[in-house]
Amino acid sequence: MIPLQSVTGGGLLAIVVTFLVVALFYAVTLHLAATFFIGDVPSQHAATVAPVPAVVSILLQQYGTTAFGPLSPSLGAGVAILVTLVADAIAISYVYRLKWSSTIPLTLLHFGFAAVLGFALNNIFGFI
Image (cartoon, rainbow, N blue to C red):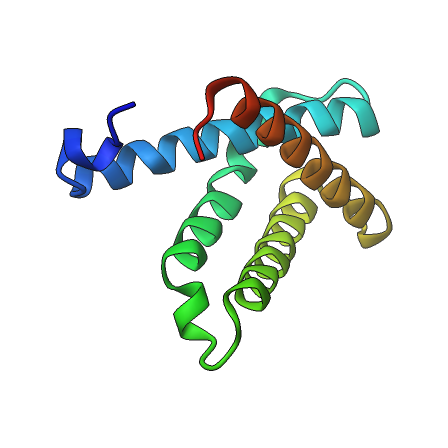
């Protein structure tokens, strides 16, 4: 498999494509989770929320492990996941107009859907 950076040069195009793919992935998994948890919801809500965790996760993946100082990489990844979940929860609460008692389970369900689908796609296509 040819790495994306060798095709695009690792510049702005790689960043934009990565953001769009990650935002699409988060939008699909959030819409699945919201449909399962809430019921029939417009997909536009998921598309509105998705850029928030996409930007946070991409930035923290790039700078998170070094920005937290002496933390080990695994602990830095844990902090990055926690910050991404908090940003996702805030965006979900705002866009879906949910109380925190409904936002937290939906956020955790979104995380679960994203983890399972990401694991499955990784096993199928071998991205990592």
